[in-house]
Length: 155
Image (cartoon, rainbow, N blue to C red; front, side, top):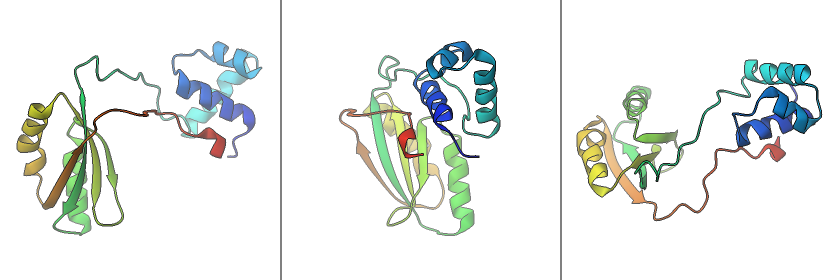
């Protein structure tokens, strides 16, 4: 399905504030509430809107450290990749995980309180995952930009 201008506006509004009602969105995209609601439902059914969620302030929660970890596996087969992915899925500290092309196999984004809690996470979980050949971690000093909003002007 091709997205029209109104669909893109609806998606932009939802990704800015998922708590907006269909009536509030309708006002901003110049539709009445029923057709706007139908569009939102269609966008959900077609998978454009996966879920609506709240974004928490990790610093207020004491989760002050973001670590990016490059992972190289010792085995490159499908089984090793699948097993690693299964282990990572169970670790809430890992907020993002990407299968990569190039010199590393995975890139992880890990959120934790401080160096000591990362060390505990590393010792008790990360270092125990089988088939890891190499881990390289980098600590983010400050957050310059963070967004969950996608660049809808490209679609």
